[in-house]
Structures are given as structure tokens and as C-alpha cells.
Length: 363
Ligand code: NAD
Ligand code: WQD
Image (tube, rainbow, N blue to C red; front, side):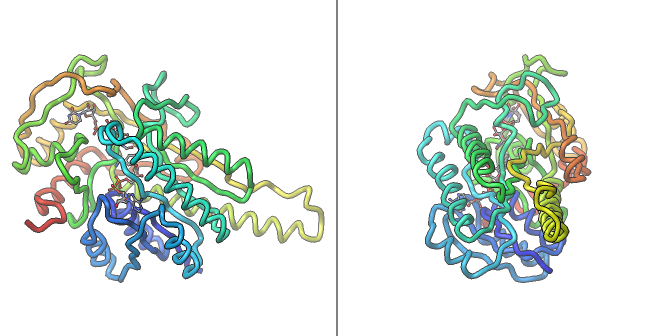
């Protein structure tokens, strides 16, 4: 049976790529997005790429009434919850907006899910919940702490999900902690389209390369790293999308186990039933490898043959020296691991950027 998935925030950068992967894996999708940081054109392009219409509903996850209508109209197996605001600097300036959108929005969604007994969730968390890590690579049991409202909003939702799992065994809450998503679909038709000047490194590099920005500022060259610049775990967005499919397949397997278990134990005794509840399950999605800012800039210039002028600038407030994942849990539980290289990330980013110098906006 084809399972139907509600994809909140499905018009966004990671959501649009995941819609393609979900369709290719045989899932039915309904996208729910308020387009606050995305455009309808992304959905049009996804529909072209998969050669099928997409059910798109413009709506806000804080709107319980509208969500109820969506849940009443569809039988969902689960929800992938991408919808959220993600700019760290903006969250410092507008904390209430971030807590309202990311925390209240998630609570509203969970309440509606509970009402409709849809209790399978894949939540977009972030490596930001690890703060400044004590040890590397970072595994899922590392301590969590955050220094900005964006990160706090993700951590708060994680705590809410943990409490929910304790309260009721029926919840299956896979919490994917993404490291640094970059890259674009191989077609060059969809990619990351920041509203203003990019905050993140890869879109900044590609906008310098395409001539929209003059020069990259590298924030800090005195970190205790290979070349003094910050080290991060870059993960191709197409790999990330595959990670969501793997998470859903895991949830389906667990649901099947639970059904089989019920059937076999029906006539015997329920005390021997295996607990197949997933509960709160945090999983890192990263490549497991760290790359420095200079290594990424050099790789991008080499593989695209574009020059990326840069200057060194002071450290950016709140930045850490190094951050990279242990991706062992994703491999063990989801049979997922990153396949695409830094070269792929640069080539695909450049294809998207050069084919769409203004993103989804035609002028
Ligand atoms: P994005 O901004 O491209 O996508 C988020 C989507 O959610 C957008 O289409 C936006 O319009 C929508 N949205 C926001 N608030 C909404 C609301 N209240 N109701 C309905 N729709 C709403 O961001 P992305 O990079 O695709 O990130 C997706 C998720 O992953 C976010 O939750 C983000 O915090 C998280 N995440 C992103 C990164 C990253 O670096 N891109 C890293 C870790 C975690
Ligand atoms: C990477 C490296 C910068 C821009 C952020 C969020 C995190 C997560 C992913 C959502 C750092 C350096 C950057 C520039 C630079 N998002 N840099 N010049 O900070 O690791 O993570 O995005 O959850 O929460 O904080 O990513 O791409 O901003 O920075 O030198 O113009 O590039 O200092 O070392 P970051 P980033």
C-alpha cells in the first residue's frame, strides 16, 4: 500500500529535495508550507522533475483549524516536519518570532497529529543542539546546549518530543540532527535560494562565484584547526533527502513488527510482546568528515574553475572551531550513509547557481 506523508515546509530547500526522494521511493506526498521562506516555483519544479502533480496547501503549522482540515481529508502514515525559521542572527534579533514559529508551531502540529492518531514523525533538528562539542566526532549521546534562540527552539522541541515519548508509547519520533546541508539536485532545477545576502558559507561562495557578491569574508583564521579556519561536516542535500526516506522506512518496519507481534501474541500472552515503540530517537545525519572553510573554497574554485576572492575577517560571534558527526547510528539503524563527496557538493551547487543566478525569481 502506498503510504501518504505530510511534508510541512516541503517547499523549502531540504523539503523540496526530500519530496523528490519520497516520490521516487513510492510515497504519496502532501506539501504544507506558508511560503514564508520559499516560493511556489520550487513546487512547480519538483512536479516537473517527478513528472507528476504535487498536492500543495499554502498554510501555517500554527493554524490548527487548517491543519485539521488537511488531516481530515487524508490518511497519513506520518509527518516530516521541516517547517521552521532557521536564521541564527535573525533569531537573536527576533526571539519571540522564532519561539512562536518553531516551538508553538510544532506543538500545534503535534496536537493535531494526536487528535488524528498519526504518531509517526520525522523532525528536522540540527547539529546546533550540540553547542560547542567537548569531543569529536559528535555522537547522539553528546551533551546538548545552545547559545541562540534558533538553537534553543530546536532543543526545546527535542525536549517536548522526549516528554511526549515518555507519556505515550505510540509516538515514534525520529529526530534527525542535520550537520551542514549544501549542494543541489543534479538537474540544477532546485537548490538553496536565500532571501537576502546568505548567512551560510556555501551559498555565499556560489554567489561570489556568479558575480552577485564581491568577496567572501572568512570568519577567523586562528582556530585550532588544520589551517586556522572553521571545520564543519558538509552533507549533500540529496544524501540528506535519502536519510528522510530511510527514516520513514525504519518507521514502517517498526509498525510492521508491531502489527506482526500483536497478531502472534493475540492467542498467547501479551506479556511476551516485544516493545516496538520507537519513542524519541535522535539520529545524526552527517558525512562524518570535517572540512575547513579554506578547503571548501579551494575545492569549489578547482572543480568549477571559478575564482572565489576572499579576505580574512574576525571570528563571527557564536561560531565554534570544529564540528563533525559520528554517523554510525544512522548506518546501524537506518542503513544510511552519505554517498556524495565535497566535489559533488561544489559541482551541484554551481550548476544550480549558474543556471539560476537569481534563484527562483526570474529577474
Ligand atoms: P527553508 O527555510 O528552505 O525551509 C523551511 C520551510 O518551512 C520554508 O519553505 C518555509 O516557508 C516553511 N515554513 C516556515 N515556517 C512555517 C510555518 N509556520 N508554517 C508552514 N511553513 C513554514 O529551510 P531548510 O534549510 O529547508 O530547513 C528545513 C528544516 O531543517 C528547518 O526546520 C531548519 O531549521 C532545519 N535545519 C536546516 C539546516 C540548514 O542548514 N539548512 C540545518 C539544520 C536544520
Ligand atoms: C560554516 C563555516 C563560518 C559564512 C549554521 C547554523 C546551524 C545550521 C547550519 C540550521 C563557519 C564560516 C560562513 C561566511 C565564513 N543551521 N563562514 N564566511 O555556522 O556551521 O551552521 O548552518 O540548523 O544552526 O548555525 O554554518 O555555513 O554559516 O558556516 O567564513 O560568509 O563557514 O565561520 O566556520 P554553521 P555556516
